[in-house]
Length: 282
Image (cartoon, one colour):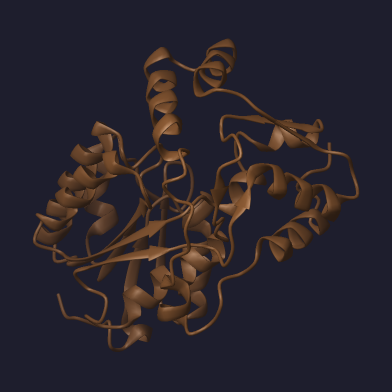
């Protein structure tokens, strides 16, 4: 397949998880950059299911590049197997430019990254900090809508990143030829906040009263069990939070500034815009 990365208008990119937090924004940013987007998911657009390999070839065939976002956690053994297999199939079908979303500071994610790198693809790994949108989309939202976030983050400081910045970095990696091929790109937001401070920012934006209640990872796991989360998933998440939320990510990365030539979006702006959209209304 020809390399159209120098001519983005002629480039077709497969976006996995195109209805999810990052995939939806990557698809939007790619279209805005003039790329032809093949939006793939289990439910809409191009049929693609990480758990059903029979859907992979039709989704990949004819694309120039692909954005890979594994739906549960990039550090799981299932992710390592699936990303490696998909990357090899992509290369075999001529889709050699692959960008993987990974997690900054998550050591269990490294085997998944290595599986991508061993595929023969022209790869880029985007290692992102904790998403700002985790507060507005996903399992943390209901607690905030009811006035309390219960979470095992203590007073650790995180450089929360706006998912729109992740999308812009992904598209930059896809459209810059080989400039970022073979690179691990670490990206974060522009400042460090504790979860308590983040909740306070959301409270200010919504005009409501919100509380952050820190618990241990084990207590949080017990809560998940009570909500019917499978035991093996609970154990994985407990181990993940015990390690990932230990302060190892309490530093800033300059990836957004370096790659996009502008500052990363600030959490305050995210909170104001998201509150105005009604995300936290009960």
